[in-house]
Image (cartoon, rainbow, N blue to C red; front, top):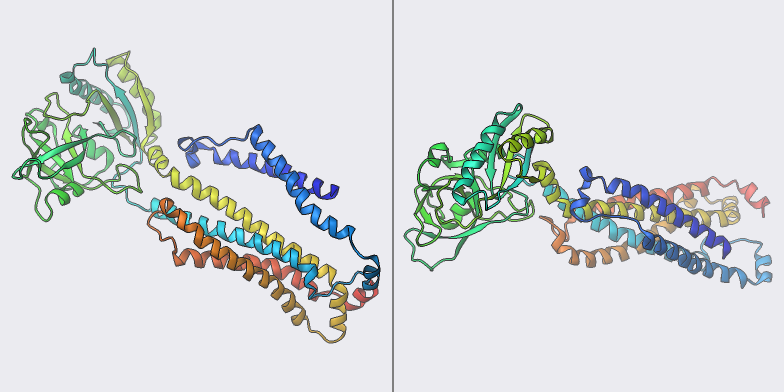
Length: 484
């Protein structure tokens, strides 16, 4: 019992040290953006839990063999002279059962990790509809007391002109709702030629400056862009995305069609159709969107124009220009702060963190479980070979071939793998039923994932079985018989 407790406590200490090393990797913000999901730390409660688990497992798994060892019949033991038949089930049954359970749990984790990785690959392969490279963003909020609503556009235009003149700046824009951000804005609207109240039409509302599509690299599929000339005219134009056009005017050219945001507001004509973008995340369906030009003239929109986001595309190193932008803002208004400063690539990375973080951590757990299962198979089979050296020698003296000895021990390991694999497959099929909400564009019973898991699992287990089985074929029968 003392030997087992020391062994398990040593394992617990090594496990905690390994956990500390892993946390150094997992909490690197540029790698997993864990800060967006919630911090991961080790504290006294975790340490106490690990210590208690180590002691309890040491007691539990040390007690059973200790009781067996203390209740041996010494007459039978001396008569057997320490020999153990190769096919003795009472010796290997318990060990084989534990190894099979270990294999089953590792297979369940491996299947879950495979599905999560498949979802992550699908998620990362989704086209965002915009180019997040070399784009820096920052949020501005104008105080109502100093900035009347009709003067907000003038201030933002002045700021854009100043930032546009900085070295390395390629394009500058203003928007109220940035892709992948937590800011949302939507408005209901009426469609010309349709009775009011017959349909409930709602779309995301984006207030933009003329260079917005250029800054984000959003394609204009049809029509023309909003420009400076539109800003000098009463608000009369808007751009819609493809989803909006297909939803409101299916099969009809939307250019020239008109909508209004409320009954007393002016009619607005569609002058262009923009490509769909993943505005609310890669795993969220694209919604209908309306793009309006930022002006000082209200036209029935409910969005607060005092809270906007400055978007700047640079030639390289977008974060390096933040200081220069702060300087230009300070010259315009020293008391106006900027916040939520981030690159667009960081925001895109954060949007997939809810899938990436569990996928990577589950993969680490699955890999650890698979390694432990392989070690278990190897350890038990190697112990069985060591205990059966005398009988191996007898069989070889009586004419048994090395291939027969190899096949016997391989079959023993394969039996454990088949039993544990069957139980693990059953558990995996039950697990994926609860993973529906976490999977993206991948079936719960995707055959490619299950085949890949089975292939990896088979290779690892066969390698773990082959080494001790090969060692059994190299037993010198003369040495084995003399040692007994």
